[in-house]
Length: 143
Image (tube, rainbow, N blue to C red; front, side, top):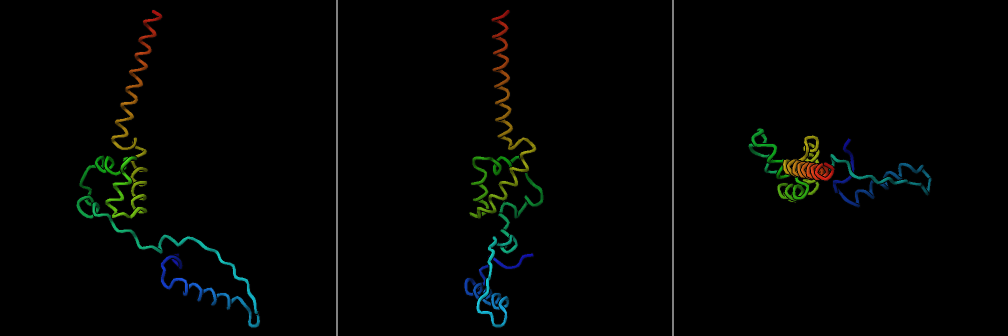
């Protein structure tokens, strides 16, 4: 469930009051001392308000209008994509990172962004040309 932590609703005073009440409940009627063990955990994810939807997803894009390759080019690029997400997420770095990582994950099985695929194709063609040139030179030398 989504109990406790992280909301700030009373702060330190509320936490201390809860701890004292818990300690009193653990101690028997006449016990002067009791041992209380605290375990601190990060707040649950549901304790935070859900992030707001970036404006770029508030209009026609929700209807599926647009090209996925444009989205990948603009927002999945490893050099500038995260920065662009931060801009459209109004500086919410956690939301920007989550959207960037998700989009990169969706692009990976398909060879990455269009630019990454193009660069990989260029590299492969250059390697093939170099191999062909080397093979041609070897044939000329031996033949």
